[in-house]
Image (tube, rainbow, N blue to C red):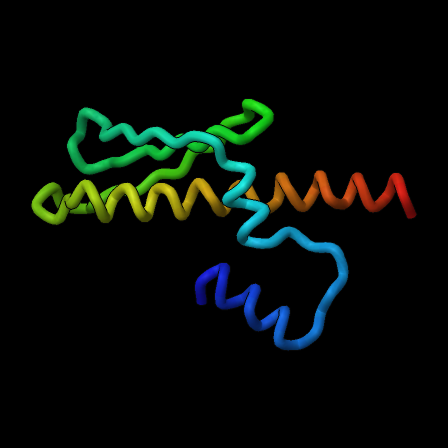
Length: 100
């Protein structure tokens, strides 16, 4: 299930408490770079967030014959994005604690 599909399910169930959404995650990302490591089968995606913090995600083909740059970038980005969720969740929890 994609992040957006999960968000759609949350909305369809009428769950309205404060939460981090896929749009929040994408809005926090202000830059991304991709690097293929010298082994020729590992891709690193570095996402830069609005506050300057960075997170990284990796993808690696077991066989060099299966390496595809586009697929590697998609998987590495997905893995990097998965690290943004808990960071934004922590920030939201702090904000809620201040006002609650």
